Image 1: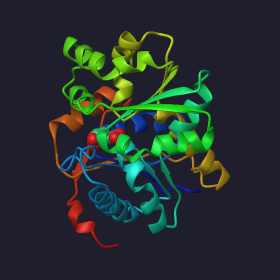
Image 2: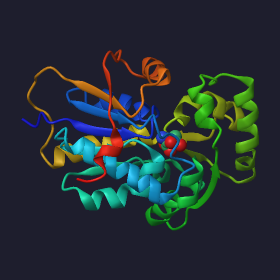
Image 3: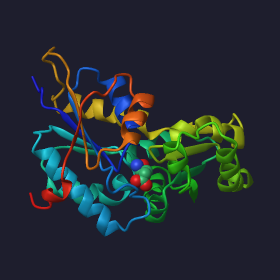
Image 4: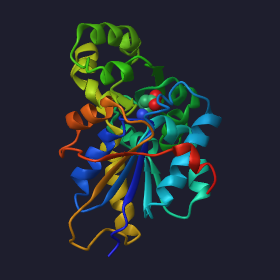
Length: 271
Ligand code: DGL
């Protein structure tokens, strides 16, 4: 009946935007969420460190008997997915490949913009995937490191954020970009700001939606959808108890999160 949970992890709170989409599209699935609130942000860290952190989290999720893992963080998906997928014998899905597919489908001009953390943009993973999907696509990228902290501070509708958006996104107007990948978990919450900056015509691609869709397709094809009909459980773990986690969860999720447990994640270095 496949009642084992799906493990979802992120560098902190951002992955809750992906979790929200999974809850919408797969309401019958049990979930275990881990947010690495003690070590966020990943976007300014090296590949080696991101792989080490992601491996520890994967080891922790395995102790929860998860049947699949969703890396609900663009930075960890860009830098650690291949390494994680090699280490486990359950399916692992990241947010980058589904996001790239959605963008390749959305563009008409074949000019796609990608915004993300410094590490995601430096990895060029979106460029690689988009060219794999269509070699004619031109990709214009921009790291927007201040966006995630602005969202976490609740400044989603604020002049300061509009000013920063103008500075970061202005150059997309010089290219004929008609689709923009929101390549960081926090950016879908800035959709209004981004539209104000770039206009209504640009298609904003939220990888979270496509990731939940790919997850559903994968669970169906592997015949591991939860068909038990039993009450659904969502568990939340973090590496540090922060007020931000609870307030962000309340803003983003359809259910209130009453129990969050702290895990000493460094303990999970070895499998
Ligand atoms: N969750 C990260 C991402 O999607 C953003 C926050 C961070 O830098 O860790 O890239």
